[in-house]
Length: 299
Image (cartoon, rainbow, N blue to C red):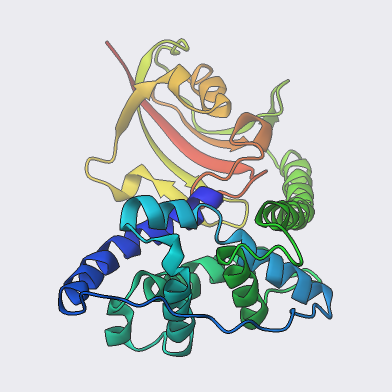
């Protein structure tokens, strides 16, 4: 996730830097701005604590980027923070976003980084509030370790987010396991030793491919709730080709049992699919349901 946050910052700040350079030609000398020191932040609730930590965590890698990519002297960090704070107040003003790197970073924090972080905590007892997040963000930029070091805050935030995601995943994993148990009882559904489930919709009479063979297929992939995440039928041509051993394990097993001309419904448990990994819109521990037509074995 760290990389995602910093990559998001990189995309927008490059444009901001060119605007800042143009402004610098008019303002040859920029005087450092002194930031008024505030009283220590009081973290009253667990949400305050995680919000502050999230703000600090969001700055991971930012200072090296400002120095190396934008040429920002850390002696002028107060100026950057001033831009960040002003942009927080006027974040919806498109013209104002053009000023400085700090303002562009603030825009990215509000538009992408903070919402993504908040999403991770939906359904938990903690939530990220904007004001305390910003306090943590600025504290990290000021190298203020009064409450946490940036490293400790990042670990705290990462550990808490992981725990929440693990809890959500456990519920979703059980839903998929229960679905497979019910699905196995349906008429015509067969289950292999690996746990793969399949139902023959059309029985083919051609040859059966080996794992190393290249095949041409048509298919549609769905989640257990019926959501379609991929379909060759929506493309032109509707067919796609690959080697049987170049896809997820469930596909390889199914294809090497299918005679050419077959059309099967194939239900792949997460162990034979993407497991605990997120794959695009496919959540961790997802059972994948495919309609597969084996068109040919290719030379």
